[in-house]
Each structure stands twice: as C-alpha cells, then as structure tokens.
Length: 200
Image 1 (spheres, rainbow, N blue to C red):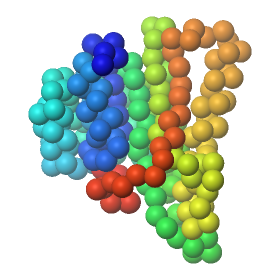
Image 2: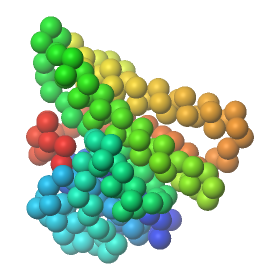
Image 3: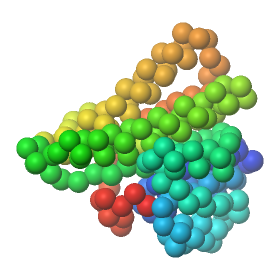
C-alpha cells in the first residue's frame, strides 16, 4: 500500500509501546519521517530500533513528557513543523466514582486532553499555511459509552471527540482548504502489552 507519505513528517505521542508504537511503525514504513516520543530513554531507543528493523528508515526519538507544558514545548522546539500529528498519549484505570479525587480529574484532563490540545495548537497554523496536514486524536468507545468505573477516563475522551467537531466547524466557517484536516479515530477493545498507567 502506498499512502503517499514519503518526506512527510509525523509526530506520534505515547509511541514507545502499544497502539502508538504501531502507528509510528506504519507511518515510517510508508515513508514518513517519524518522531517517536516518550519519557524513558531506554524504551525510546528500543522503539526506534524496532521500527528500523521493520523497514522504517527515517525515525528518531524525542525524550519529553508530552503531558506537561514543558514537555510539549520541548517537542515543538525539537520539531517546529510537522505534517502529521497523532495525539495518542493517554492513561486509564478502573476506579469507583466516589474514590476519584480532584487530583485524579486534573491528572486525566492534563494527560488525556491538554497534551493533544497544546500540540494541535502549536502545529495547526503551519498546516494551514502549507495547505496540507493531519491532526489525529486517538480516542476510544468510552468517549461515547462511558463505563461506570471509568468516568474520569471517559469524560476527557469525549472531549477529544468534541474538540475535533468544534475544529471542523471553525474550518468550514473560514473556508479552510480540505487538505488540512483534524480527525478522531475511535479504537475498539484491544489487548495491549503496555500497562494501563504507562505514558510511555
């Protein structure tokens, strides 16, 4: 399959394991210049090596925590312009609603919402100027049908979907070219080797 991604630059957050790693691998194999992100240098190096073994020639790692303002700024400094942004970073856990603290809510919003919003804000203008770009938010079915024991995960997940819808309407109102787009991909149930609270 040729997705016509040769020489396109792609940044994938939360990409040293699981879904993020496989997305990065596919983009690299298709010819994109891929930046893998993570907080652990050893995992980052392992992910980059794994992608290269699969045939992804142009892949590099950026050590940064995309869930923080500082980490997002470091990513933008390292890669000022990208054609494809995949906001995959996210955390989840099973927890009774009565036991979800204010700190839990803030942490989930920071990691699962703001991490993607910051990077989308940083890169979207450049995509419009070049008249080509893709911003992809990886979501889940919990954003539509939230499990009772994962409310603090499902509500931020729904925000990702609504952020995309709001951005779509804004683009239409401005007459933005369809070459620069924002999308939400909703994954189904999956069995991953990564731990539930591992932000890669």
